[in-house]
Image (cartoon, rainbow, N blue to C red; front, side, top):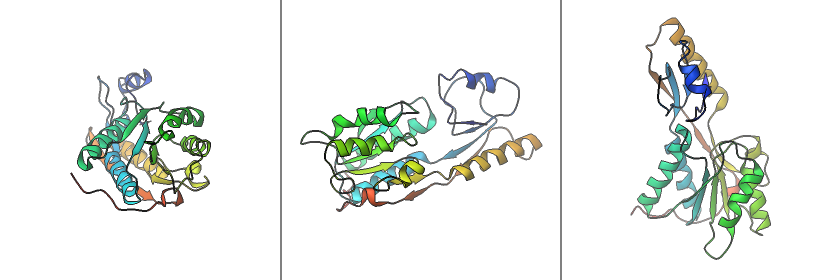
Length: 221
């Protein structure tokens, strides 16, 4: 099983060409042999729902910190941000950060977004656990999270739940996600399903005080 396979990861094509069943968590965008099966989330839908939530809390200048489009997950987030921007005529500022971005890297990326009169009033952090860097940047800028700037995460986890204030996040239900990948692999090994099977996996939006805000969602353009 390979979770979030990235283009450029040399181990992925070697695994896919090893002659054994391989299940990926999210699709593989690289060339060569295809996975035997995949379990996928509607990551674009999740980000769109998150941006709708932020807009409904008064955000008008949202920003997204996301990896480059080398994985299906990151590519979906970027496409969703672009589609949402055009739908509501509300630009989403996108900044690139590493897939496994550290809080320090995120803080460095977000600091310029929170400066000046046209600063972002909402920041969505994609990498798991790196949302603490956004909170640190907001504190350094003298902004109250949940009031003057809204903060959200694309991946729920301890960093989001235990933050001060707790951070609104997309719960990808990782334990169930892993079980779904394992179940698909077992079905492929027993011949219960054909190669190329793709199964969906549900997410949910967990609202927390970091996006308390206030306001009305923008109308569609």
